[in-house]
Length: 443
Ligand SMILES: [Zn+2]
Image 1: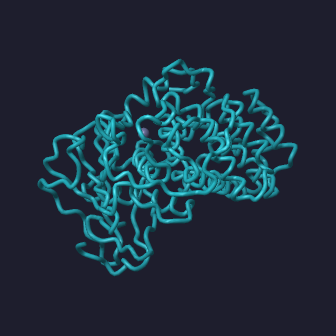
Image 2: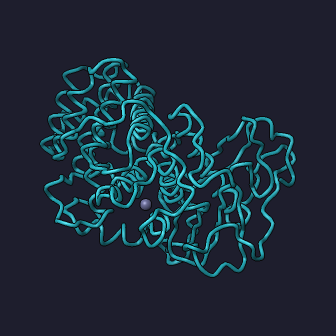
Image 3: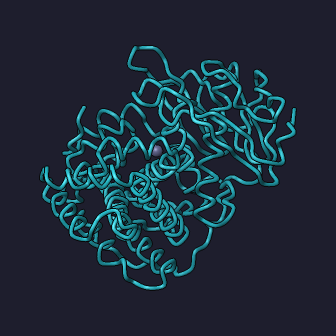
């Protein structure tokens, strides 16, 4: 590792865009601190578990059997500044983009290792994850030893590097974490639901990670004046927050709405929507526990949300409460985020990859709640969120949380490893997948 700075033993500073700067309200970068463990962060950036490889003549995305390491020409990555940080790099430079990709992956990994309460090894073994920031490609993907990002179109028609899109990169890290936490099924036990589960879980991994930005939580609360439930149902919340990930998960798609053989991204909306409703419900319950609103307001807010009704008087009550104690609303959203994150991480450790169904994913989540709480006090409202979508939770077969065995090989019987077939299809997700199901997305 080159150029280890003197801050390597402590936390290392980076600057991240919570959303691309062409999204109104997110024009500025946010300061984040990473590391602080035994893994020092050095030039590239790099550490023992991942490193940026700024490939100069890589003409294609990785595709089995073409796998890391990349052996072509590279540009050297940025070195840490005099105080060991990377926060002085200028946005718009190649060095900043490389550092942005690294810092996003590292931040998402730290968030989810925190929820899982353990180190999450890469599924492909001990080699460092190769991060390729600037590939001539209109997509991003992750797989056996790599995460690489291309370019998308900004609203003004210029190209925007996905390396600087927190949502996109966090979603890809989500897939990598799931390969380790849940694992990969043998071909005979691979269900159509497995791919949809993976997409939903990767969206949720990104959403929960995104909610670790104070600026994102603040903007969401301010945009909907504290009234997440109604705004969620009317979908103004998704529009106002301007996050692609939130737009994905804030939906009202039910299992019965799906056509037979639905594409995985479309089908994933049913599951991610159920978990998003749990986030909103736990936010409301926490608001009440913190003393920001009464139980009656929680009940009325929920009822209005379920009927997708406007309730101006209720909105006014919440608005007044928000003006009195805004910090309680921010706290409630942070607590709801952690409630969801902890349970998701544990549920993924409980879920075997074989014969995956939405019912089992829901059942594992309930069991995770039982393990964390020691009682079933939350089950009625957690179950309600799943059953509203048409998902009847099924208890997990595996009672104890375990990491998946490392699939250090191809999955036999498939033309190539499942993870190598995976493409998140960013453009497809934004257009066709959402149009294929009756999601009230405002575009
Ligand atoms: Zn994906």
